[in-house]
Image (cartoon, rainbow, N blue to C red; front, side):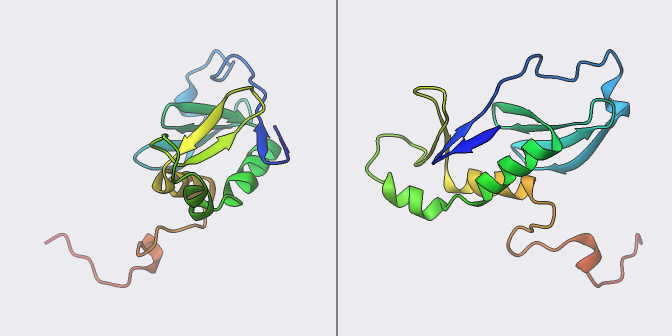
Length: 139
């Protein structure tokens, strides 16, 4: 995966799932999950699997970092303003190098994708379990 200018060049590799003839769940480590996506790592094939909406990616560690940096650098407000008069429902249009192909997001979808890709990121107002300071009782 490379980024040229303002477009994302995604090389599609088939098959989309792990090539191993194994029960994959025993090798999968789930990193994050949201309403619309999951990111997990297969220890058997050393590939990160990102599923978001109806898009699925398989990344090496390097490709995941390139993609994360690209997505983190997108200013949702800027693109929403730039495309406010567009007929598209989703105003954040990210061009790819595949002619006529864009990834399209609402601002909240882009934020959710950023949340999936960044393990230390929190949703505003949300605390991690270790940050909650209260006594819990099952009574």
